[in-house]
Length: 358
Image (cartoon, rainbow, N blue to C red; front, top):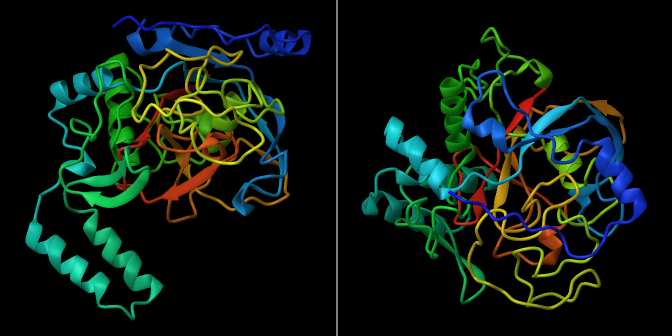
């Protein structure tokens, strides 16, 4: 599949150019075995940055800002595509979280319990988790520009919008992403990155670890790695395009909505775009803002002011999603925006990209 590679509009400043060199922009990881995925990986040189909303304009879960130090890592230039995911499914016969049984009676009973009222928060969470055992995914209606609940027919093959093989795969859960990463590792002759039962990351000997640098297989980026890469090595910048203003010519988002000072009103495409068809940041990474929400490997931790090194959170219910989406506005597309969903949750805006320890 040919992937167009367009450069961001406008010249970068000398500071940006110097930073791009410092983080080895565009340096592809070749891999010991020449596996295909390695050709589309970029080496990001580690360093220390101030994680969190350095502009002070986002939600409480984006603060307080705090220093994070990261080791070198590799991250994919592109989000995993429909075509990429289809090859995985064809080789393995894998069924995604959204392809569970379409049990209308069970779903109806759950809906009736929701409608009964007087439910505790714990009871509502339990009902939602039960709903996720059945087919479907959360559905963003492009024309109405709003969520309309779970649609039992929505999955990666039918996300409710028109897609081609070079568009980012949607309606996948973090479980689905972990299965994909392990398949990719196995094909490349690398150690598996995940225990698929527990979700734990594994070192090169197959033992659970909290040290992300000990994971040698393909994996999802950590939340800190994701933000560092989206911010071109920790720069003070709002969007994954490398710019402080969101423009529909550079980012696929709902550009006809909102009253933010940091976006230019523009086109709302109502669907995904081919990966790599809009602007890359100075590291050569595409769609770090907009197109598809991206799962990260660790769970969603509340920020503290404490400095951290290669943080990896396991003590939380949900996993983090980053990067904005085709149906979201400019605020969601900011590189600081965070969401938290459980492992098998999914919607027609959720996708992922892969990473690898150096």
